[in-house]
Length: 308
Image (cartoon, rainbow, N blue to C red; front, side):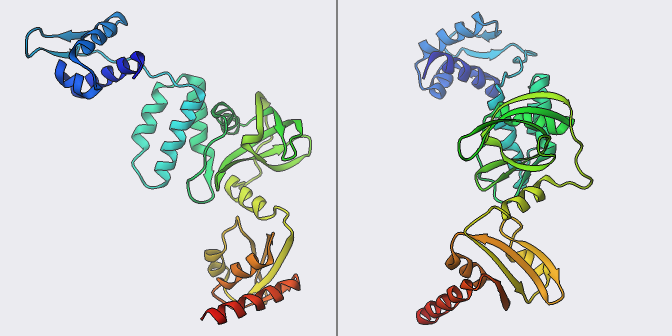
């Protein structure tokens, strides 16, 4: 272990234990007692008041009443800590107290970004995404939380870099990727963008307000369901809208009530895959389009029948 890391671990041990002997600290750090003594001197040289008792059973402790200065996080570290705690809170774990402590030790610019992230962050499903650049994510969240517009450099899927002026309205995690719901001032409409493709962010003036009742998570879900694939599938399910919604999330399909049932539209690269999805509908259904889907369903039914 490098000396700097070992000295910080020694400081943490002294905070945790209150009072500890040289041998106890040596065992925790995996070093000898002589190294502990040298590291104690290093802490004192840094202005940390470590008190010691001499003798065979001597011990060390931090001076009563001393408090370690606030932790200094980089933007990426602040984003990682905040995102981890927000995900823990979503999973039902006790995270409010820890979030409060993190907020208190952050400088104002980072604290505002973390607080905005708490308010506007959405998840469409399981928490399994890794964030893009932390500074970028916090800047987008801060702009969304404060209602500001930003000038960004955006790299699309083809690798083409463009300058965009956006009013971010929310940040959403879905299936390992991060998305930004924002009003695009050049295009004059709400757009869905990948957060990891935003290269630079510059905060600007007041932004375009959110539409009334705007839900960033729902917007991202609808946008992902409309991503163009090889096939556009449309069926009518013989069930209620509530029952259909339990089986087909908004990131997979668009659902709507119809006089003859529930209309469902989704995209697919493979009709065999689409047939498998519909096989789990739990109700009868009618294929509206494409006609080729009927053949894929018949082939799936034959394979299932043979396997049974």
